[in-house]
Image 1 (cartoon, rainbow, N blue to C red):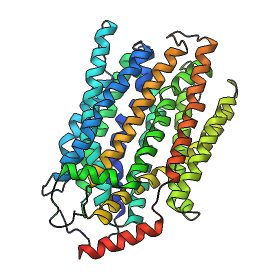
Image 2: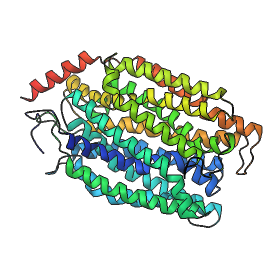
Image 3: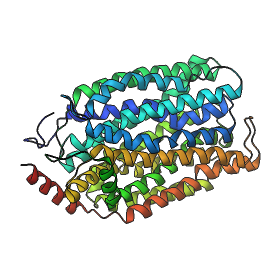
Image 4: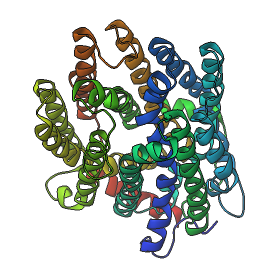
Length: 459
């Protein structure tokens, strides 16, 4: 591992891309899980929706222990490759294997299939935690420069949403092609391809990146002390709360996206534009809008500080999601336009918020003289996973409460529930995130001062 403060904190485009494709790797599993796994379990396999909701919650409860534990382990790792990069190399193959296993539920009775789902989902989340927390923490040590971190975050999420673009466009056609009428077989082969790609990309991220920021000299490891300092880190607490709201919003909406188009908008899975069905086109155009928004992050940054931009852009996105509730089933064009606008304004919030997470790690060192980068990121990621767990559980329980049945035609009550979960419910959680970020205390000037103070202390 190189010196704590490099001669030049500016990174090459090659290294930024190298870091970014790590999130491409993550999303070939993570995004596929968020968008397709709930549908796969409840429609393709036919598991009970309430049972799947409980599964999503229980599996994520393990993260209450594994996330901070993995953060602490990564912070204590010492190797010639650094603290965090070794995990990308060691866990790339297990990550791909478990991603494939999720979508390989064997034939059998529903009770056996549900047990298989529990085992593979929990194991997948353990592997995801073990590789993704070090990957995320790498952002905090790849450069000490806050502006460069925002730039790296932009690369990261362009790469991440590049994966989402490919997944949204290709997953359903691939499932149709490989399955030849059997969705279960189609999902298995499709996920096999995605898993191989994810594995190779994590190896490339390991090879193309370096770690440059080290903890203060003489820092002693004490998990109890580090957890206490984390709780005293007010910016971290606020980002923790905001993360729960944001990912609950994402999880609820993502879980029922395919249900919304299949049962409300009339998408029967047949080609709609070329080889793509309606939901694939919807997911693809939304991801394009997100990527355009991410690419415009620097331009948006001219109009306000990180906190201000997060508040305004998130609020606009919440309003658009709420208005979606009033779109009739046959107004497909309006659905696409509104989705494009909402995704575009949400795009810049993604690199901004991850740059803020790195600033929070700096704040902990600046305020308390102790740096625990991976623990900071593991706590934030636990908040996000908790949000995904809450959202996934809500999706299953609410669908069951509204009388959802795995049939081609849904009751009016079931359709109302699907619409509610695709629009007003995620909008409400987005508003919760806005309220939390309103109390975020660090200005851009504060971040710059911390950067200068920490650089001076490292000399």
